[in-house]
Each structure stands twice: as structure tokens, then as C-alpha cells.
Image: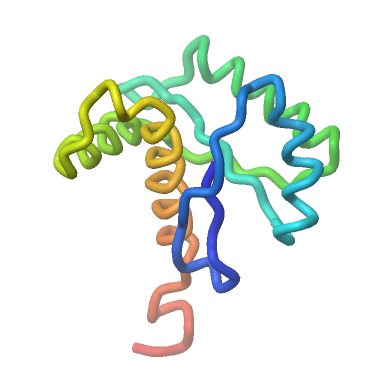
Length: 127
């Protein structure tokens, strides 16, 4: 899991939770961190199509929506590979990357979302 700063400018790593604990962790974390929206990585194929993994994520998103969370899907293609490459460049071995790759990929995905959601100069009345 990654979280953004109060101004929604910067994504930072927050936690890695076992799948079985996600909902109980969210119940505590969302109010404590004043989270307004959950951005869920959406696993499209390399061709940009949905596959079996996307169906499982759709089920997860439906569960989040039933619990009253505001949710946004976001393309997560290449984030794991990019995170692993970045960690390798920092000298972290593949064996030591376990756990770190998921959080790093979450940070990359959330940062891409934040960057895309940020209004550009044309949106603020500037030229």
C-alpha cells in the first residue's frame, strides 16, 4: 500500500498487508489517515485488455464499494518490473526485494495517478 501526502503531490510507501488482512487494515487506516479515495491497481494485459486477473480485481473493487469506499481503478502495467529494476539499481538483490517490490510498485502506480490527476496550467486559468 502507498499513500499520498495531504496535498496529493507525492506518493510514499505505507505498508504491505497479507491479503486476508486487507479489509480489517483498511477499516483502521482509512479513517486514521483521512483517506478520501482508494486507487486500486488494475492488471491489464500488455495489449491493454482485461483478463482473469482483472476479474479478480473487479471483485475486490465491488467489495470495497459495498463497504462505502470511494474507489478508482488505475492501470498497473509494468509497475512491478519497474519497481524491481529500480531496487536492483540500488543494489538490492532479488532475494531481498521480497515485500519491497509490492510497496515500490504501489508507490509508482499511485504517483502516476497523482501526476495524471493534478491540474495542468491550462486547467488553472493560466496560459
